Image (cartoon, rainbow, N blue to C red):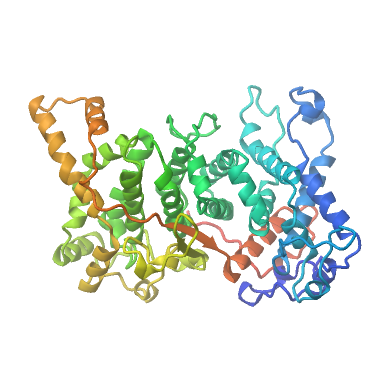
Length: 549
């Protein structure tokens, strides 16, 4: 096994995906029976139905059946993940010989890093095959919550290889451009969103599941870079999930925002580096969010209050980047989807003081708040610039317009995160162990980065309207009346000229590739303990550490 698992026994910063000669032979163009092996493994995984349909839907029938098939599916998924991980990405452009048979060009086949399995995955182009792939991923991932949603407890078996399935889903999205386009235009992509949100929500407190939350975040970030995804999220959410998700009546966009809010306010500290990724996902689909639920509106404005509080704002030099993304979300909805989003407008009006305090912030006030919140002897509990943020610092996120054309930072005055540093930024302040202290340069940068004009204009016009209603009714005004008034008010001519829609797309790079390799082999290692086939004392790719209580 050591010949296959070379990544296990080398440090992450020294890992070379092309170093394994054994794997190079296994994935070569002339590897014996490679197509047969690839399609056999893929069909074994994708065609599996974890429900009891094969036994006539009889409850608890899985207790009387052998688990050999389940183990075969799990091992097939692991082997497929390993085969698809090494080498370079495959060429999705098909090539055929004179007999109309799929072939690989000789010059391409002998290129260093060639992987026949990645090529075959990239070249799946039949609509029927793509539909089979999608239905298989949906069926298997939905089992994570459907197995707990039964009337009789534990009456349906639960598939445990969902992490391997997420890796395969990611590989398919990355390798096959037709698959991404197919699920966004020909399928209901919300069927994938629900299990992703469920897994993130239920794993948010478990430090052992940080990698699972990461890969779900990456998948949502990849999908959110497409306009079709944002439009599809307006479909109503009616699925009952077996968790303590807040009750709401809304769309799948609400489901994502409520899930990400819960992870931020009630998740593991090790997920702090993902906060900007969470907000980037919501920012990407916010221009297409037709009607935000009351719960989502309140929670997003609550996040603004949270990130603008001294505890968060002065925790690091770049901590304000979260506020910049939240303001971009509010601006997108106000400018492009004002009709139908009165709940968000009302929530912003109710918390007008939070926006006013930020707009009127001065340097003496900032220094006073910072010193009061963080005395010289006290370190911030939440460090927005922590060294752990390096986990996602490698995420390259490119700003593009609605049509996918790149946008330069200097061309877009509303780009609140300065382009590719959206995921996270580091600072020398926290790196030296010193507490952050606001400066004039910091305050100037903060004001330039926070697009407050749209919200300020909104408040400038609507706050007097609400105050007048309260005066006329002696302060007793029903919320529904205010919402009806907001529905009838038009903001045309009162707001700034609508800004260009900015979408931040995930850009693959070598650092995230190494992260996925480490995550994949970590899953394989932890699920291969009976019998133990790896020497745990020699593993160098990752570390297992206990969480401080």
